Length: 553
Image 1 (cartoon, rainbow, N blue to C red):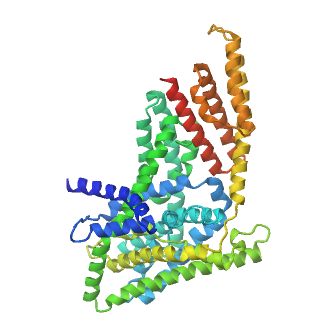
Image 2: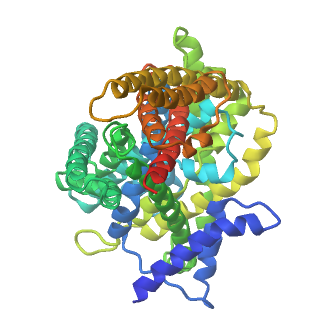
Image 3: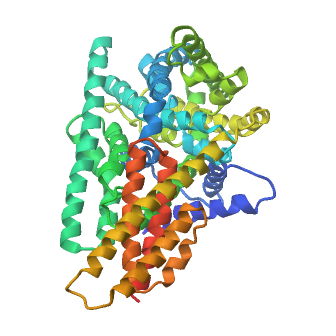
């Protein structure tokens, strides 16, 4: 019962945190508010204590969070900025693990090199969710935000995979050689991606069978969707490859096979999106509240351990956090500046986006690399003991420093990033282009829908199955086509379709499905962006749901 009440309390606090930030007279980012609420719950007066299991924490939180990040990342934008994302999410992560790892080994007395590399690995991932909670949508230029989101998605995987290697070396289950680690990294990375894609493909086949057997049982279909990231993760871990990358690959390919495809049932698309958005909010919130809950214990344990360790003094733990955060920001800024110079010098035909950035914009990209949920999940997943039963070396220092860097990066982002963004005017070009693409897509899809209505009109007028006048069919089709013509002329009134009669609704449903297929076709041809596609499909899904509900009344 205690576990049950704890889950209820955490879920309640996550829900209330979104309300509290709107009630307060001053603005505070949601992640920081959740950390504060978690720390208050751990206060002796309330006494909420959560026994932490690192392995359970890793399996419970990492797969759905990475799956969700992969799901939201448009494949086209990811491929368009692939060079920039790889340079940050893979190359910079490796440089961070090696460079910052040796820096930690140098400044923290008594810490082993393997423990230092493990700490550097958990500090390498950035958190786009925490950034979105700090900076309002539209304040950061769209191109830069796409790169930051893609980086956060991929460096979560690369950082945690490298952490796994560091833990394996510390546990004595793997020998450290550059060639061996590189080969193993390629194997587990490629294997994880393959497992993620394969599991999603299998899920799509299973979904079709379930739809055939259970018709519109959207509840079963939604539950299977929720289990998908865990299945991908656990299968990959069982066969010895990266479950982290499997969850990422599953999220990025779910749109090709699963609930966001045009063949997926309407109820699954609507319910699945709503349920998954809710779970993403809860999971992210619980992770930050867990950080707050662990703060008192982390602080007390670290101070007590520092008193027992003659090589460590309490004040050194706090200075290590500051030095390490400054080193991370300097390294990130230097790498972005170097990418700008390399792009200007050697990539004149196809330059990176970095070449257009000013020093101020590079500073924005540097401070936007906040640490958050994945860093916390990674450091808390470090085993408490080695394989021989002894305590993991310097684990209390790893947890304290990682927690301190998370808090310091969030606070610095809250203070510094708005100041840097004051001089940055986000261009209206993206907004104008967004509306232009949307209008063009609606016009093209309406033309296709009109053609589908004319075909249905011809079939009904010549049908021997139903006995009705051709004039009735013609009147219905004229009403639907006139609405579509108004859409082409820019005078759409989608709500009026709800009041149409049986045949008119049937024609509308056919037209909506034709429009949906055309939107996918336009996106495939790269005539509209993925953001436009999602907005248009959401409108169609809502209208289709209303039409079906009216039809069954």
